[in-house]
Length: 155
Image (cartoon, rainbow, N blue to C red):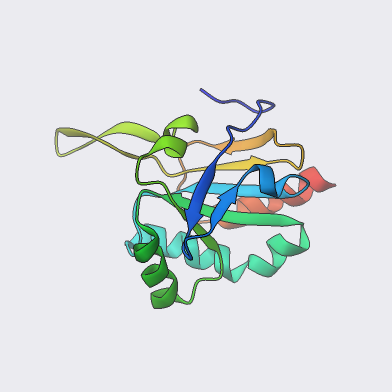
């Protein structure tokens, strides 16, 4: 299990435009890495729209917001188009990055167990270390909380 102060696991994933985004390429910036279950579902749409709404604030704090789900880059393009999203979405169909951050977990619904995405967020500092973890995110108020934490850490 990752904890604050750990080196963030490296990643290189395709974004919605099929361009590779890697943690190494973001050194020197704050990274808000959030994991979500599925494009175009109610909670995930709300979260992505709120990150988009506050994109200028995150940019002003020198932070890059990246959403990660198992959905394809094509699905991400449609999600972005359907909701006019302004954030980068990364595709992790093999669950490798989801797993390395502990976001790919056993879940259960109606007594049935299955593997799925645990909605979670990691704030990574410019040196590539984990500065804050939100392990089980509730969408309401989350983006505001991340922004406030980032502003406080930047001091």
